[in-house]
Image 1 (cartoon, rainbow, N blue to C red):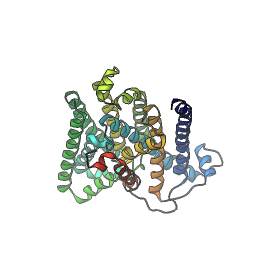
Image 2: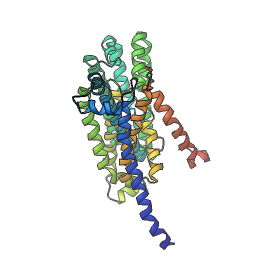
Image 3: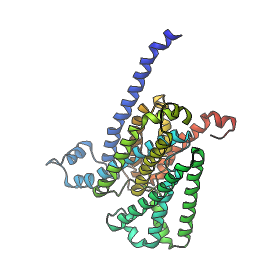
Image 4: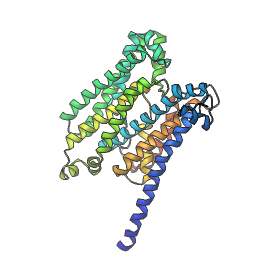
Length: 358
């Protein structure tokens, strides 16, 4: 038995390595698609000339690439990677396949902050929802960050007093539900036009970010991704439970706090600049595990990063409906992509088949 099993291990490692390389290669391919495809398709050679600012580049194409499509593609890649990595962290920490970045109420807190500023300063926020940079956009980003930060502070405070991750999960869900209820009340008593502005923001979008926005958004996402990749060893220990992790010398409470903080910052940053983007953080980690055939975070985290970014870029392309002037809501596209994955996970779950809670 042993003689047969040993030769198989290198083959498994090679296959996983090939899958990881394929995920990495998918990122530049999907990035190129996001830059060249849109309501006005741009040939690849023209796009490359515009990217390098060649003398032969069409000024109109160069304006489209550098002002609209390049910031949008970078935003999509960063947001997809951030949400997917946060989702993988949450699913491991809570040992729940349906956990996702916004389960702790961070997104709801960000949405509450935006609802407050829209209700109070709807005219200014209209500029943001139209994708125009300026004080209105800055106000919304600050409000979303403040709301997400307030919920994060609450969750981190509670995590020091609550030992059970299940209890913490329930608390997060309750905080999110309370925030959503307050949002509903605010929208009931506000002007319908302002309420529509909030609904439009809630549909999610990778468009409208400027280079000034990316100057803050990109470092936050990259720092969060770096911290997540650096923390793969304790997450591997947590796969076998907190008691096992303690026997391995893992400081479980510290790891839990840091993981919650990183995941919440990633989700909060994405929500502040892109709105509450659905399903990417829930679906992508499952697809990565299935393709890689392992839950080892040393492979899973890089795979989730590449796959999440590539998936978000494809969703970005799909929202633009290349060749037409129609723009689809981002969350409609991500839901179409993510819902079948979640349903498949539920059907494949042994707990679901036996009627037990997942």
